[in-house]
Image (cartoon, rainbow, N blue to C red; front, side, top):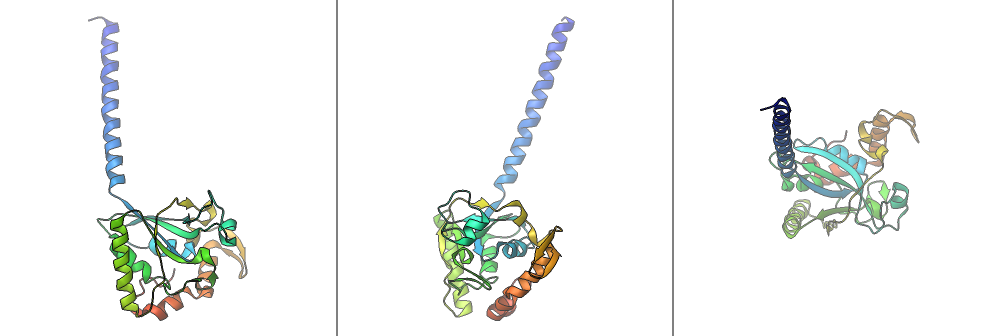
Length: 224
């Protein structure tokens, strides 16, 4: 075998090793992706819903966004002004081996005021209403059952609809993880870091107070 043939043989061997390694990495990535699920809910201010559910063991991330409407690539200003049909929503990615969809739905109902058809707490209007979004009949049946259980436990009519999943548009970057941000912002409470501004807003809005009034010790989150 000549030197040129040796080099060609070595090159083919290296290429084969790289190909096998790449395929292995892709299989691992696919397996990881296949091991997660998503749940999309609307519970009023998406900062609060994101903050609550990112504290749950087994939740990988929660992304604030908009869904349920007709407008493409809506902005926060458009959605909150009304007319787009979109809800402020949060898409929760979770590991079902650590926390189930049933557990997350049970927590969701007990973290909002599901009796309010006009918004949530101090935030009023269609974009702040509650909703659960499902992608198939199995998810719908589960959501309906958890809703019925929550209604029985609460002893009041729950108005939160179970809706078919539609395109989810992530909100603007400044909304993501707002509750733990450090950027200086100007608010009605004066200049504050995002995390402090969020806490001041949440307290003034009465979210935790109302949830506690409704659900008592069953309320899963105490604010953050």
